[in-house]
Amino acid sequence: MKSGSTRVLAAASGGGHWEQLMLLRATLDNYDIRFATTEPAVAAQHGIESADRLPDCNQNKPLQSALCGLVALWVVLKHRPQVVISTGAAPGFFCILAGRLIGARTLWIDSVANGEQLSLCGKLSQRWAHECWTQWEHLGSDARPRYFGSVL
Amino acid sequence: MILVTVGMQLGFDRLIAAMDALAPTLGLPVIAQTGKGRYTPQHMDARARIAPAEFERLVQQSCLIVSHAGIGTVLTAARFAKPIILVPRRAALGEHRNDHQLATVSQLSGRPGILVAMDEAVLPARIAEGLAVKDWSTLQSSTARQLHRALAAFIENRPL
Picture 1 (cartoon, helix red, strand yellow):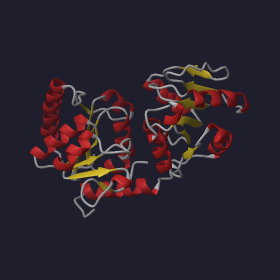
Picture 2: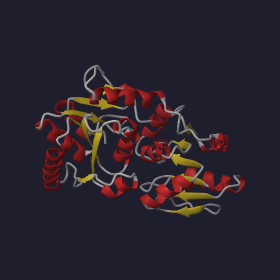
Picture 3: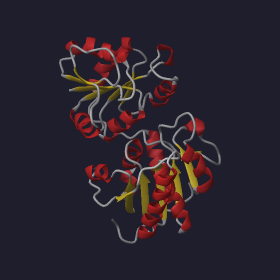
């Protein structure tokens, strides 16, 4: 961590979403970066010991989702990031919402797995995040989602 | 070692059978995650499911990955800078509910470390190409460079 540089919270569920965050690490590591994920054990495999745990959730599990929203808020209040980014999925989206509450700038990068259409959280992020990016050029537009390349 | 995977959710016997036929000619051990397929390989170390941590270890140890066009495997291969050959599942052959893997390979074809075999007939040629790929960890695709630049601009609140 570099003191004085921008504080960034990067959030992603375990699996493919997390893999994509790791592929962005060369850039993320230039800032005061904090991680949150549903699988801290996987983060530890990547040498990140201090990742905060987010409960897994999706739109079919309202109670889990409510709990995840609260935990996301707690994580955001703890770190007070200036920037929140997520590569998915629902737990990352809750971090973006919580980020908005404290005035952070927020970026949703929709998963490269979504080559046909944006994910549900991606669509919600079009409205709720400052920026919503797709990783597929043919899904990009001038406004939302925009296209600025891909992790691959 | 060559690692073959069709994921865990669906079978993809066309790829598994093709790799099983090729395995004795490759001069390398072949390990295969066969998913829910019915074909029983004779020449590969085949397992229906490989746990994620073990799978990651095998990717690290492999020199080449042969896979269905699943993004998860492409991402793992990218993280360890392993060359990967993608064979798309075809809806017409009952291998997936639609042809999105065709779209995936057409988009990813030509990026560093990624080779595409549109069908099993071209697998031997692609495998030879894949084994000739040396370390490509320093090669970043132009699209990845673009995303890293945009991400840095967003974090630093510069114009995108």
